[in-house]
Length: 227
Ligand SMILES: *Cc1c(COP(=O)(O)O)cnc(C)c1O
Image (cartoon, rainbow, N blue to C red; front, top):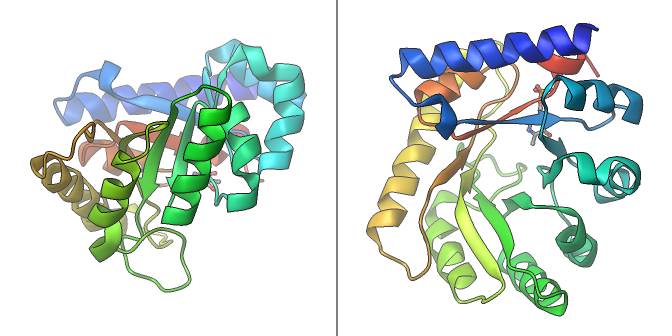
């Protein structure tokens, strides 16, 4: 029961943030993050209206998709190892976390084998923290250009995870920066590339992300409780 209530509350908060920002609600999609959540509780979220589910590990996703697969779209939001690309192309409608050229090429190759065009986002290390996932700001355009050369990869936009902070306002400049990067990449007019999607915002900061232009918010804890 509480999952359905939480889901509804998050949807209402998304709508309120969209309205504050003067944005059309239909331009924002909620990705319900189901990592570590068991199938019975995922079913409750689906019943409440969750139609896009985010997982961060290929094997865990594979198990869930075996039973719940047809009930929702599945998104890969966590770090993806190149040697898992062959599984990922079979499992995910959108991969948010593409951050290196080796992975781009392997996804392209594996997607070609199953006659798929794999939708991806490029994950940017927006704060430039050395240990964090994501391509550096300075290498992002080059990676997008590489991906644009791949016939079985379609880049739809950018994703980021700002450094953790208790104060969601701290994330705002990073969200704004990602949006500016997307605008500037669009201006490069790279063949086949349009930066229509911005995956940014989690439980503690999704409203700020929406105010800064997010089109995909990835929310787990606010729906399922603490992991
Ligand atoms: C776990 C996770 C989320 C969801 O985080 P919550 O704080 O639980 O909403 C979003 N994005 C990524 C990449 C994650 O790994």
